[in-house]
Length: 389
Ligand code: FAD
Ligand code: DHB
Image (tube, rainbow, N blue to C red; front, side, top):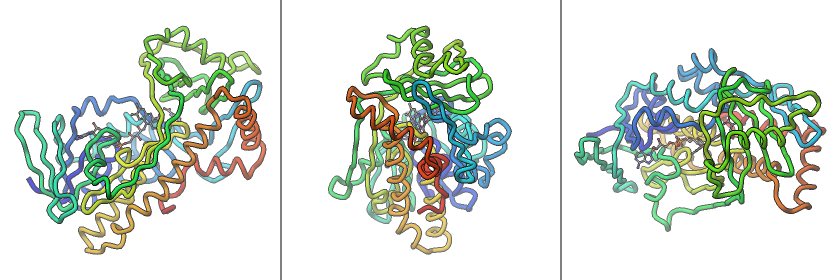
């Protein structure tokens, strides 16, 4: 097999890249270890920033997003006894959309007409630093295949082989771990809030998000290593009620049947550069952010928007300026989002240190009372323009 762009991974980064390339008349083949059904049902992110909505819309992927997604003007920030609304639209002219990653994935599967080879095993990258890069993999019938390409796009998330295909001497890794995780639930109950609530609480952070008018998504800060099976549904709702301030100022949290319960570890990770020869990294393959601030999916979309434009210029117009600056340009946004996600995470998660708690509360009071501070948060949360790079 031969193609112009061999894409590893059919998550949002890989499928969106293949779709954008196809619209520019560029061939690709996507290989994916999981089945199409598995990839489309993974419960993950839920918030699309302004530029991601614009990009998906301009790529012909906006119909369901605009019909079924919900535009939010901002979020609530709270701590015991106080809840404040930050209005991103007033502060920055930009809003966000609540639209699950599962739905983005379904829209991509429906729109992308090109070849996607699901359920492959043993994906290997070869000669990525030469002008004859290729992949080998074993297809679902057990046959080893070879795929030759002009370039390889590593969109294989945090556990794929692409990032390790860059030799150690040619890469740098920056990392931060956090002493807590999130216990996330999906529940068949109408959200108890019109917009997301990010709650600081001395017993730990809580987040009330949603997926639709009848499905809620909520998170609790828990210690690393927590087994979700050790939390009964009742305990989860009681803890959420306490941390989210049930009963305060007339606000109530309505519990309902929990349909999914899982624990997410947290990590900041960046591997640089995002290019090695003819291998280009995009999305979680190159960087991971902790979820506070909802940047993971949005960053993957932004990388791919840059990469698709740069590959189109390289393969169709024979100009290399954009592809030569892809890594530096993408990394400027990556580091901005890495800082924002780290900042939101450290501002909102409880620690044992009373000094930290006072700094967190001071910072929360500042971002909810100073227009300058609120605008900084809003600008990062609603997202920078795709031209930020
Ligand atoms: P992925 O979605 O991970 O896609 C990579 C694809 O590559 C996968 O389909 C994988 O199966 C495939 N692959 C891996 N190895 C191979 C191989 N060897 N060969 C072929 N294919 C391979 N972000 C938020 O903003 N908010 C959230 O609430 C949130 N929750 C999350 C919960 C979980 C459990 C996880 C893991 C992530 C979450 N994220 C969240 C992050 C967000 O989902 C990711 O940033 C986003 O999925 C990145 O997209 P991607 O396409 O780069 O990577
Ligand atoms: C969701 C996840 C986040 O990490 C976040 O900051 C906001 C919302 C969600 O899954 O809905």
